[in-house]
Image (tube, rainbow, N blue to C red; front, side, top):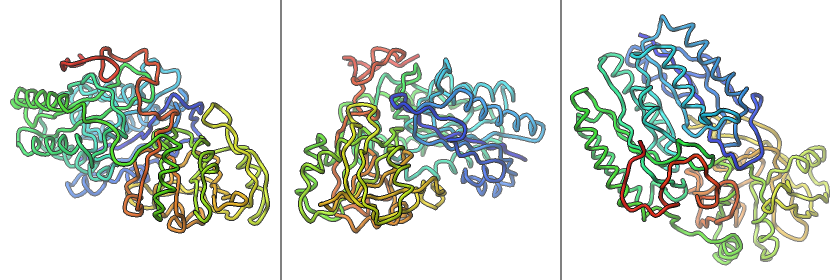
Length: 491
């Protein structure tokens, strides 16, 4: 038996100006694709040969150019057609939150899955692994046999979820039976930073999912938080349950409704948890705590949700309130012009420049006088099975004169979420009292390294407040934008 595997990872934010072109995308073909998807062993241990196609790794960013998406789609469909006579099933890793500039349906995943189903016919088993911050619809469910998203946010279970989906597809390929997900779309708009799995109500929701899945009539069950950083008629949360056998459908539909009602009744518990504050207060509070190493996360400029990492608001407040002796690192700030100028100069050079893309009020330039103290690599990823790392450029770190404030000046949007990435830049995360990073909730790998964390509730393209965005295409009424008291599923 043979399985065809492919993937596209993209979390697209329409509130940033950058349009992703083909040369911005990391493309892995054939065996490299199969290895990067982390599921080869699951199939081969079941006696199934893996045929790799294309894994397009785009990550969180702006919208994708239509031409780039069509190239990805064409390559996956071309290789699928080439191997169609050989394959017994299809495994796909699709984030669920892509946005294609100029595509009427907006979502690349929803278009791609329809094209794949049309090519292979009604009965070829198709399984999809997704991110909970993707958007799923009943129509998407009609095109696949198995679909499941991660439980955890941060996504500590991403690799394991992909392997679970692979094992379930292997089961279906060896024991063919009619199988179709039940997708209950809920009128809820949730932000990722307001639905962390270590806090309520996600703790309770995940326990309910785990308990439901113990029933042998349930092949898989999951909850989609959804994604709200581009306008689309597919936005909203969802409960997805896959019956094990056709005769289990009625039972599973009732279970899905029970879960949806329970989640709906917990909706008022979604919100920011832990330490969070408006931008200036977050800076003052973290300086006052005085614990090494503390981290401030910049919610509105979260590179992990597609922002460009170029806002300077927190830097302005830190320069205003900095306390003598406090060693602070900004990791980092994207400014293509400043980066180009600094890249031509060696370490030890005194520099004077304006830092800030000046695209809006949040990225207003800040005048910097200082010294280049370090040169290193812009490195994306952790060098492990979760995300194999790669160098994407060079970074210059500048110390502001008269302070111990260091700024990593970048030419790309990078989320520094692992000590390894700091080391590649020539810096030691733990040498700093405070590190400011472009993320919302604290990344999985920084949690054990951080003694104190405060999330700065900054405005910007990755704001978690739905009322700040001018939605036109979404279902209404929807919570929390509207006063919705009774659950009514989105049909």
